[in-house]
Length: 428
Image (cartoon, rainbow, N blue to C red):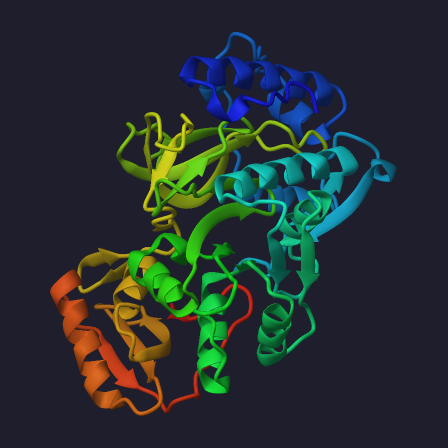
């Protein structure tokens, strides 16, 4: 792709701004007169990417993309080239409306996606001797497709572990002496749970790193501590979206946060329920513009992810902005319980402080005047469920100043997840 430089990751803020401007200009040149969606969006509002502020452009929401795909099925009009130019299709799991987003990529756009994953691997210290295992089902969800194909293109032995039981996957990664695992935080904990049941020594295995994604847990201290303790390996968090691309990565020197890949994305943070840009260090909604996915780009896309961006040169040598604490929550996930604003990520962070809890589910009942939160915790074998439920309730009260209803389930009774967990339900 144009403008890719070996030292992009070490550019200072002025260098990054100049690079972003050049890539934005190249992107506009490609889509002008070709991409019907963006031609309509920018009609009547001329924009010069070399001189004009991106903030003069309108925001783009997921609902607008959904409407475009609904009105122009099945792929919508955000396509810069003819359908014969596209070689990959991925889609989301759907929203509350049940409509998934379908996203097409050209070979060039997929090369860009893999280049982003190359940055993620460099930041995690991947070497040619590392062996990867990817324990997820290779369906239409983009998941770790980019991670797998990047690892193989780098020449690393890459083991696809779809269509296997958790026990079989563990045997597979141990037999092949895998050193890096790519999965969700939830599934990392599930594999550790099965390893304990089957007598596998994960902490003594060659696995040295887990690259986790799909959920915000990789940057939640209690969750990452559990994973690292059970695996005896370092957790590296990562964030991305089917429609945007792999935008965030954790470096070796600064755990508990995500660098924004600012050589490939322009990041802004705005008021969660507004459109004003908020200062660095303040929590807001992340807005992204991707610069290399020419076949189906997005400008000023409201991701719905809540972050706190901080800036400055990291110990890893990069000047990329950093989402301190990773993804802090979702704009549409905030709960108001007994007058308190809380996010599911924060609640899970408290629950994961208890090693006696194997799994949990939560239900928010919003039908009454005062919404109620009911949490069901499943204790590990041999633990008094009622006692641990009482301690979790006390911890919630101390942390959030309200007492949810916490009950215990029988060991092994709650569902387990391979990809994104679905622990939360709401009664509207």
